[in-house]
Image (cartoon, rainbow, N blue to C red; front, side, top):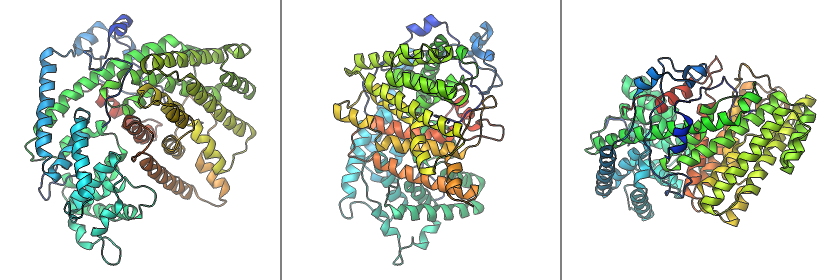
Length: 604
C-alpha cells in the first residue's frame, strides 16, 4: 500500500554546496477594505534542536526548464557558471536591522488597528494569509481572546454583519476557541433557512463559506451554510467580471482552513488590492520574510540530501523511490515556523524511510522475507536480519541507526528518550504492511471496515506525528507520551484524511509494479452493484467527517501543544497537493508550488 503518498516519478534532489559547508551552517480580509465590491475573502516558539534564527545561504542553481521529473544529473553537479549566475543570497546586517524594524512597525500598527474589532480581524487574517503571523503571536492571542470574551456578552458585537460574524468565528476556532456555531442562527428565517437577502452580500457569503470548513460533528448549521454559500457564490461567478469571479473561484476551491497559507500568499496579494493604510507595510515584511525562509529551506534540503546520499539506500534499492525533495515537502509544509529548522531536517528522515519500507513490501520482498523483516523490526535486533537479503539488512540498519540517533538528539534537547515510542510506531507500521501483503498475496480483499482500520496505520502518519511530537519537545509528560503512543484522534483523523485521499487516486509511478488496494475497491466489494462514482462519493463524505474530527481535536482544551496541533493540521492540508495527479501521473500543482517556494525570485 502507498504510505505517505502515491507513487510517481523520482524527484530532483539538490546538491550544490560542498559537504563541509553544510556541516558548518546553522540555520497576508482578505485584504478587504470596507468597500462593497472589493470582494474579500500561532504557536509559541518551541525549544528546538537547531539555531533559532535565519541563516545566510547561497541559493541552489536553477535551470530554465525545471521539473520534478528531471534527470538528477541536471543539478546534482552544478557548474561554476551555474553558481556564479545565481549569485549569493547572503543577508547583510542592514537587511536584518530593516527586517526587525519592519516587525516592530507592524506590531505597533496591529496594536492600534486592534482597537477596532472588525479591522483587527481583517489584519489578523491578512497576517495569517501572508504567513508572517508567527512574529505577532502574543498580540494576536490577546486580540482574539478579547474578541472571544466580548462575543460571549449579549450584543457585545454586531450580530447581523455576515462578514464580521463569519470571520470572527473562523479566526477564533482556528486558534482553538470553542466558538458556538449558533452565532449563525441570526442569519436564518423563521423556516430555519438562511435569509434570502444574504444572497447579494458576496463578501459575507465568501466569509461564511470559509467559516463552514471549521465545522465539527453536530454543527448542522455549518453544513447548511456550506451548501447555501457555495450554491450562491457559484451562481455569482457567471455575473461578475473576471477578477471578481476569480476571487470567488479561489475561495471555493481553496478555503483557507484547508490550504497552506505560504503556498497561496502570492495569489492572495495579487488578487486582493486593499485600501487599508497598513497593507504596504505587511507586504514589505512578507517579502523580506519569504526571502529568508526560502534561503533556510534551501539549506535544509541540501542538509537532508547529503544525509540521504550518505545512507546509500538509493544504491541498495535501485527500484525504490528516490525523492528527497518531495519527502522534505511534508515537514516544510507542516512545520512552518522558521525556528523549526532542524526539526524539519530530522523529520524528513523517518518520512524517507516510510517510503523505502513501503517499497520493500510492495515491490521487493517475498512474503516469507517480509515476515522475517517485520519480526526483526518488532524485536529491534540487528542480528535478526542476518539471513535476509542485503537490501533488507541495509534498510533495517538505516532504520535502526537513524531512530537511535534521533532519539539521542531528542533526549539531549528535551530530557526524554523516545526510543520506545519510536520503535513502537515502526513495529506498528510494518505489522500493518505485512497484513496488507498477506491480503494481496491471497488475492482476497478484506471488507471496507477492516481495510481502513489497517490502512490508517499503514499510511505512516502515526510514525510521522509521533516523531514530530518529540522533535517539537513541548509538553512531554508521561500522560502525553502514553496518549500519543495510543493513536489519539488528532493522529487517526489526519491519517484517515491522507489514506482516503490516497485511495481516490489512481496514479502510480511508471517504474513501480506494486499491488495496490483501496477503500473504493473494498466498498464496491461490500456493496454489490455499487458504481465507482458512488464509492468515491462515500470516500469524499468520509474525508469530510475526518476533517470534522480533526477540527474537534484542535479545539481547547486538548492534551497537545498549539505547535503540534497546527502542524498536524498542516500535514492534512498538504495531502491534496500530494494527490493532484494529471493524466501523465505527475503532480504539476505541487511542482509549481515547489518551484515558487524554493527557486523563484520573491515578488509579493
